[in-house]
Image (cartoon, rainbow over all chains, first blue to last red; front, side):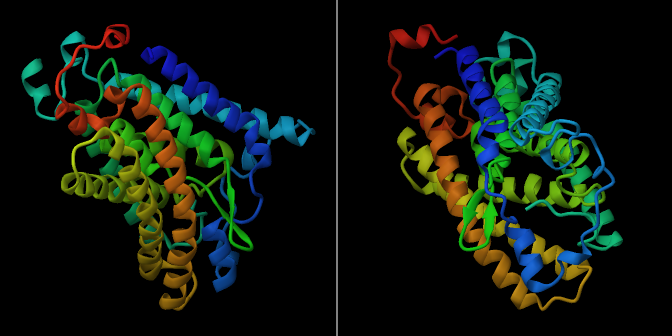
Length: 112
Length: 231
């Protein structure tokens, strides 16, 4: 499988998870929240400074349909993560074709 | 396991902020050895996949749920330093855009899920890989075991931070038992997802799996016509 094909298939899967499947995710409190509630320190949690943001808690402000609201938030978040993390990876990578055959950690030192 | 603002006091949050900044700076240097033109797209994909998968909370036990942390998964796929960067970007976007995890708690969350989970997952993966035969079929199961352990280990990291600067006086043994117990269950989901994803990528492109390089390197050289089409 070509690298491009693999990355595109992976991204389509990720977008489907964030945009569609996320609607069916469990709404129960997560492990930490549950333990905090049971052991009695959940009320020490404070609202985040971004709690009033347009996408806070994975729902899009102004979109009433819950399926669309959550799906849109998931897709937007995925795209932002892709651009930031992908951009960072391309910025710090070794450049050029000489890096393609590097197989172990110390081989890179001699290739530049 | 996203820690909200308020759970930990200010000194502890400042300290974990310093740990996070240091960890990400070191990872920026280390990731250079892991990333090239071929693997950089994988880093973007892995971060996006971790973000998307973290939206899928799966039910655990009676009243709680869990989601993938992704530290072990990312470390095995793209290498530990790049994994720290991937998970940190996910946590940053979650805190800023979605109010998932606090702002003053961002350092805590990067320390726990971006550094502890990745470090435990990767080190355990390397230790187990070192004692087992170098075979490609073992990469995914070993990654799954490492992923399983990384979740309660990260929960233990939270307990350690809470013992230093928790906002409320909670008995440490109660907190430890509850955190490690529930997160061991969540770790089963982490292991299944990690094993499935690492197994799938290893099946089609083992050369793009960082953790499969030793197994690939010890394989006898052979000429396969399909390999020519992959570059």
